Amino acid sequence: MGAGASVVMNPEGELETGLGDLPESCVAAVLLHLHPPEICGAARLSRTFRAAASADFVWEAKLPENYAYLLEMARGENSSCKKDRLCLKEVYSRLCRPNPIDGGNKIFWLEKNQGGICMSISSKGLLITGIDDRRYWNYVPTNESRNLAFSHTVEMVSRTLAMLRS
Image 1 (cartoon, one colour):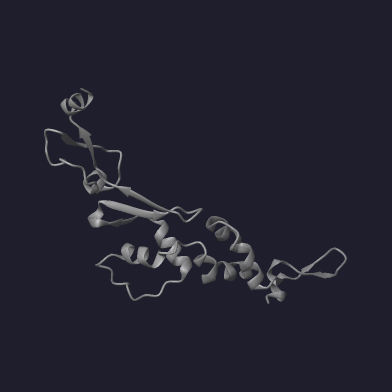
Image 2: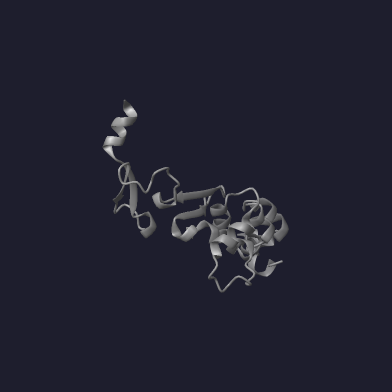
């Protein structure tokens, strides 16, 4: 497997083997114990490592159990690529990017190192009692967010705070 490309000549003129001579299944078994960014780094070592790093069983171990449901949510209702079959490495990559849901009021993504599910909820996506009552709450614009749905924060009106304190 790749012996011609990975054979190295030592100073004595004898042939030595290189990383490319390792069986792909052994390399994949080692990659299972690495974090996803490390797997991608190892894929740059040789063709064997690249092929092992693309194996679905390596990435399936890194994905959460409900990855199929998350992918369906990430694709959304208006996606034309619903029938496309992605390899699990592409699925992991897709889910690590911010994926808007619920009309853009919520965004989820996978944390790249551990694969944990992260979610950000805009103030418009929260269910706060009396949120539409201007006597208690104000929407305050903020320029700290790049996402339009997250361009406002909710602020409790000061007289409401005074009522809560007394």
